[in-house]
Image (cartoon, rainbow, N blue to C red):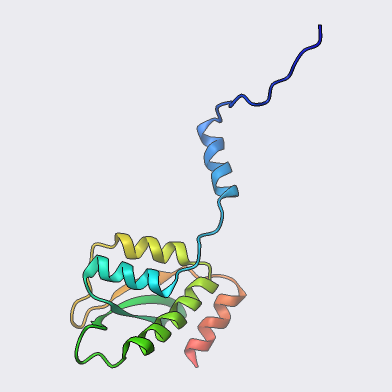
Length: 138
C-alpha cells in the first residue's frame, strides 16, 4: 500500500528558529510619509512640531524642535512646513531608518519644551550615510 504524504500539517517551529526566520523574512519598514508623521505628532503632543536634521561630531540626529505649526510666530505656512518635513523624511527613508523613527516618535516619554528639543541619534551607516553627513556639513 503506498504512503500518502500530507504537507498541510503545521509543524511547530522552535522559538529560536522562529525569531531568526522572522528577522530574515521580515519586509523592510514602509517609508514614513508627511501625513503619517503630522498625524503622529498631533496625536502624541496635540501640536505639529518642527523636525530638523542636525550633524554634531560627524553623527546625524533627528530633532523634534519646540516650535510648532499652530504657533502664530511659526516661520512656515502649512505648504512650506509640509515641503520641509518631506525633505527631512526623504533623508530618513533613504537611510532605511523609517521604522526606528516611527517607533521612537510613538514611544518617547519626553515632550519638546521651549529651548529643549528632543534628539534621536540616527544610526546611519554605509556610503550613502557618509555622503549625507558631508552634505549637511557644507
